[in-house]
Length: 210
Image (cartoon, rainbow, N blue to C red; front, side, top):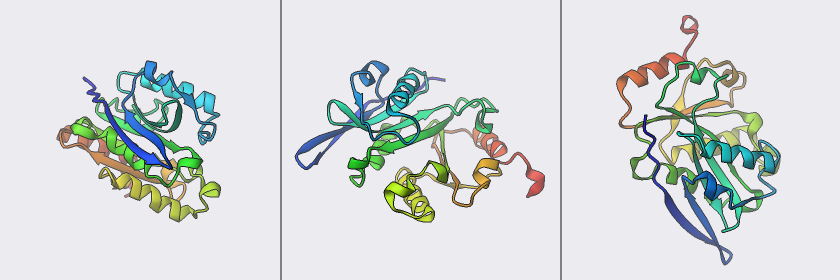
């Protein structure tokens, strides 16, 4: 499968500072930036930066970033699902995971998350894919945000709905382990019926329970 990657750039002004939102970007472009020290939700900043570079080198990998010209202030990742998760079991070439989204604490509330996600979908470059994201409450910054688990859930749903991702039911054990966890999905306009049906079979492995 050919992975169409069309670069787009957006800017916004924040207290006289220009912030750039762009992508997908290459590994070489990514290596020219420093990682903001507050980008530590998933790993230590240096380790997460190395992971971003690794994803950007994958044929299907996409990294969208927010930066000030020198420092990464946020990022969104797209890649094939981890081989240890059920979503990879069918080996679907048109199933991509929106794997991580993070914005440095000092730059939250500026809409960078929604800007980064929207850029990823510009010019219909993801219409051939089923895009999914698994939201787990233990990844959420409840303490830093001051939000309850349900307020944070609503915030994430609102964010994903900016690109028409919607809630999908599943019997995945991790998602079902807490009622705030959820699966959100966007079916691209060019995704064939066979892929849609195959994804439904992945969503529900233990159909006899329903």
